[in-house]
Image 1 (cartoon, rainbow, N blue to C red):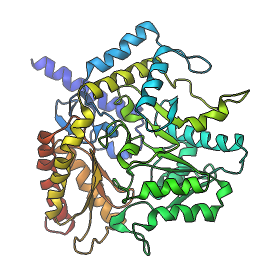
Image 2 (cartoon, rainbow, N blue to C red):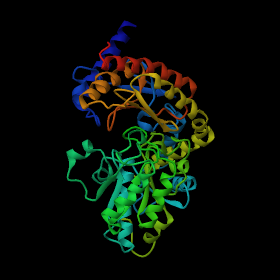
Image 3 (tube, helix red, strand yellow):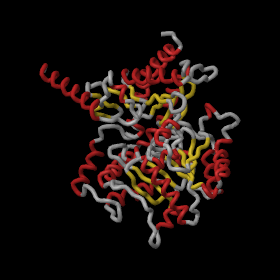
Image 4 (cartoon, rainbow, N blue to C red):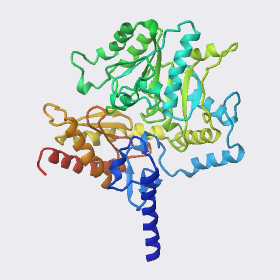
Length: 462
């Protein structure tokens, strides 16, 4: 037994050493691991994951808003393995294979309205990039070549490729890579907790019309928005917002792109966020929950109207990715959708959303909890300096609050969530869609004491 423990320690030490030397992690301050261990997750089961030391964590973020059916589903993984035996790979460049066809038809059946054309990608940024290119080429082939600009919302995250960064409204993510693809412009988001000066909730959609008119309707290709905006902390739309944005886009011949990389596949209790908020976009971008992250895959779902100009003569959508529509990924996606239907995953979200939200609302008695917002299993808590005035933290204070204490302490106590300040400091929670009251109680048991202590630390009482 002693020799086994020694071997385990050696393996753990080796992984840490190799990770520090060779693994360049995404959106990560690598210096943070000079004096601390890299958190190495080795396995998962249901709503939980385990690190290299065997410690259990409640995955309150579904890894990254994507492991919707939970961890450890060998049946879904097996679907990919079975497909590999039959056909490991063939491209969708001028060819098709059965799983891509079947999945495209399945997605079209679930998508709203006439969104019947499915263009596969390998992930979310690729889906947004593809949608922007499709919008531009569509306007060009229909006689409006100057319609190239993209309108998005402030603080919104739409991906990391240069085209997607044009839509992304987070200055810190844009600045290192400027100049970006030209044409991105932004309007206020729907953070009604911190309404921009002079605006009411009813003005937020009309800001899109003003921006289109300012830029010139003959230059604007598309408006891209998430049903519930992720960055900044789960901003939900005011009543009637999406319907008004749809009207505005129609008035100016501007395409409406619903970016549902996070919000589709049950995250909001519906197959798509457009269902939840009752609007019909021209394009849906998606990824993440399409396979519950058991394989990398995304998709652009376009209306018949958008596809029509590309179906005749010598025209084609001049765009593609080698691995898009990969047969193994498609088989996994089909198995994932089967699980969601067979096990009533969307119904579980609808049944327990109220309890999840009530648990988070119960934390409002903690002095640094300013707002609780979100929809479905996609919720956020905004942290404030003073509850009475909703005073905001300085940059240095937010750094101390989030990275100096909250992120590490929540993880140390067994909860994985996001402590983020792409906007004001928030805690985001997005558990697997199989979660229920037991997991909500576990989340509260960690969140409450940690948030209380964080407030005491920030106000000098610890």
